[in-house]
Image (cartoon, rainbow, N blue to C red; front, side, top):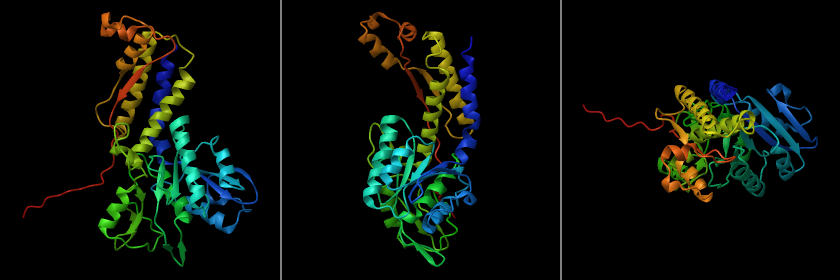
Length: 349
């Protein structure tokens, strides 16, 4: 009975989820003369051959958030488009383009990242300057004139800083109201103006009169409906969604697919393993209490109907145990926990 190995794999994934979620990987595409891919684990490893502007751009990423970034995957190319060709083969969580990225290149990167997420199942995110992606994988950073000491940065120049901040935010926390202690000033906005920007899917930083901090950690998604709820606007929620999707996909591919007979007992073992994984995430305060994993009865019934099986004469248990050739139809229901961001207190004196 080798199938319990997959339970061990899922438990291993769950036990390291928090640690993996504390420090993400940022991919940075820059345009420079010496082309190639370099993994950088701290600022001392930044290639000396880069221009001063590119070096500083990478250094800003390493400022991190609550935690430092795990590493930076540096892609040096002659154009952003050629850099994107290399990007798909790299492991990363967030990606940014060059410090002088223009709108055409930003749009191309947004399209590329959407494609990775929606058609290839590669759950990564991009931090882009002034890019209305209307997508959970695109963070639309829009703050400009960012004053740090004697230097004023553009929106594009500070995208690496924002990506490092998000990659360094633990899964149990949100980047909302995270303080950027190095920033002295940014353009001033009223609360109504900030609310409007947030509702439009903009990631902005603002000055609260004492310090500069993140307004609300949202991505660019603005269109919600049957397939994407309001939760999809939250960067924290999407990060946890991506973790769960990637862990289950990789574990199934590495430890399950092609290795076991597709009978009901083995399906149940897979269900138990996924349920245990999700319950471990619940114990780490990533998921709410109620979690269910089981056979997707609707999909299984439709499949059997397509095979001319007499499903109308079958019991629910018979449908669950029916032969589905190479297919396994499962469903899981759970709620992802967001962070405390809105507090309302009524005082009675």
